[in-house]
Image (cartoon, rainbow, N blue to C red; front, side, top):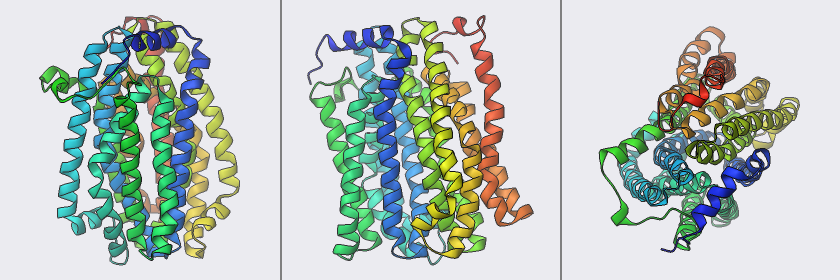
Length: 458
């Protein structure tokens, strides 16, 4: 594979010398665009499936939990490699960066295949474990089957997407994501309604779109557009290499594991109020993620700037990148949360015009919108520590919102407050996560503390 010998040096100069605010914005723009379009695809997919009925709409929430499981493995290797790669490229060590790229890519394929095989073998029990009721189960199994068949491509695509972002090539990552999203949205009505495949059509469309994204992302590496490359002979199973990938990627694994377990618990708790409550909370998750996706996109635009400049020893630029990302992300999130709060009933009704679904969904969406702006500083703090290789702190912070705080709240509050407890568990977890994460950021920010950190430390 061609790399272009001058490309790593050119990219390093750009990321370590260009004005920080403009650089973060330029890197965040394609990432935000891809996150928005990807989220709109998710919303569109949920809309098409909801045309099949409330139980089918509930299956989307089950599938969302499965996607979180697959993302947990994809982002484990993707973030674990990407953070190492950006710091190595910042330090001028492109050859070592390619070892991390190859190792993470092939490991993600293997783990995706393993998860897919086990999931297909235990499809029914898995669907029930994810929160499926008897009426949702047939729809969930039809959808999940195709998702599991494409699992290796999905996990490997997560790795390629993250490597591209950490190299500061977010535009190429965007192309891979957007192409898959558009293909999926185009195939949904054709397969679901044109051919009459129903929920199975949605699953097939998802699998085909993931294969397309995989092929497009892989072509970026094969055509020499990147400093990284994938080659079996560069795969290293040495404890130092694999251990570094797993350690740095562990916050992403934990975060996405919580994102998988959380919806399972939410679905089980919401089931006490019927399929309508499960469908409502699934819709709320999709809609509220619109604002969260923008915040994540801004944070992801910050990550390569942090990684390269930390590797190059330019601590002041790291601080400037964090400052810009937090301010910009909070502003955009607040601008999105306000109309979400005001138009909550109409937004839920657009997905499913069922009074029971709207009643639960509108209240939950308003609670979520009220706390969304607090989520962005929490996300940026986690991304900062992961980009610096400070995996211990990043791992702790990554589990707060969807794990440490959410798990006990979703188990306790419905017992105390009924369906209101289901609606408010996540917003309260967001509030507590913000309060717990800010001391970590402020401690790192102290002038006498931050410059003394070392890349790769914990």
